[in-house]
Length: 240
Image (cartoon, rainbow, N blue to C red; front, side, top):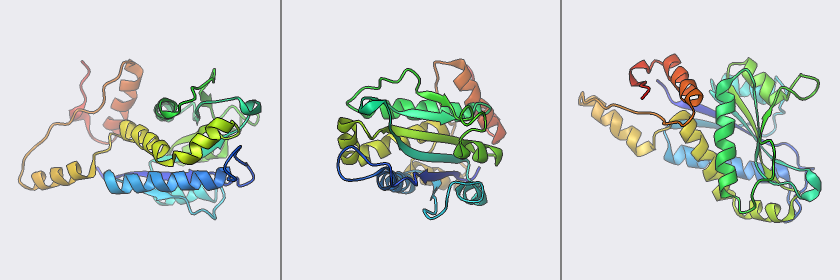
């Protein structure tokens, strides 16, 4: 199997101002996306592409670019607003016909909510990304899925909440690590040194058994098992 390929599409909304810090959604999400890419490039065995920032999010823009790079994951990275400056918590939009999309969304919400000192007050943090706009759905959910990628549109947290806005602008590294942790868990990414050592050992004809994932919910285990089967790893799947 080749390297997993991840596409990062940060917000293109400079008009969405943060409650503090004289900054905006586009600036902060581009900064966050670049740091996510750097961590993945330096520490994990995968291939990560940052969207060409001048491209729009229409079908002929970033989704087409991601498809052209044969990406597996299309991750749109945003921050949120609403609730009169009192709403808090990560919110993820997923494609309802892609179980892997919802699973990645679940991992991302879990990781991001675990790091923010202000707890989530969302009654719904996993949202059907195809329910909006009279069922047309969000373009960065609909188009990547149609092109065969696993899409998630992530609202990192609420930038119009003053305390969260201040925390977000000062914790890019922490948020980037949360995103990476979710991607590593979902994709089973190897740490780069481990991947390099495995290649060296393969050259000497040594074999290693790999166990990927442990889940409390059987449906999540089945989703990962199906994805591994599709990638030719049936020998590594075992339900206990």
